[in-house]
Image (cartoon, rainbow, N blue to C red; front, side, top):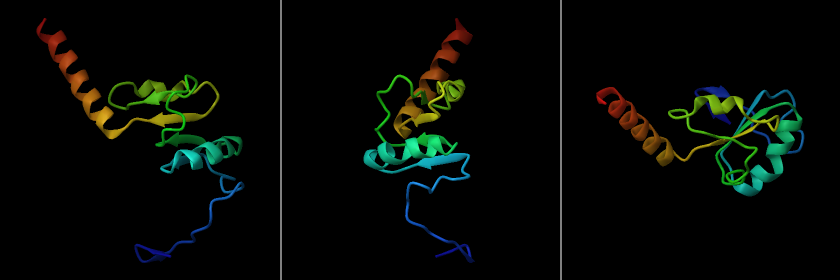
Amino acid sequence: MSFRGESVVVQELGEDSFAGCDLALFAASSEVARTFAPLAVRAGALVIDNSSEFRMRAAVPLVVPEINPEAAFRHSGMRILRKSHPKTALCGGLLRFEFQWVAEIA
């Protein structure tokens, strides 16, 4: 496959796909995340997941960079982080701004 004029090798996702990876960004179905995120963690990667698979797991922190960037460091050894939905990030950013504004005028 060609990308920006350079040849890029595309391989099928498999159990050994994460060897040597430090970071794995998952933008796939919950089924794919359920199967492959643990494999990526076992290979030593930090996983940032965009699916709903880990959404309700207390050991997997939800990171909304505009609100709680420090949550990225609280992954309890599981090494999986949940990415917020874009609407959550937008609303959270607005709420944070509102609270800061109220605090400044109070």
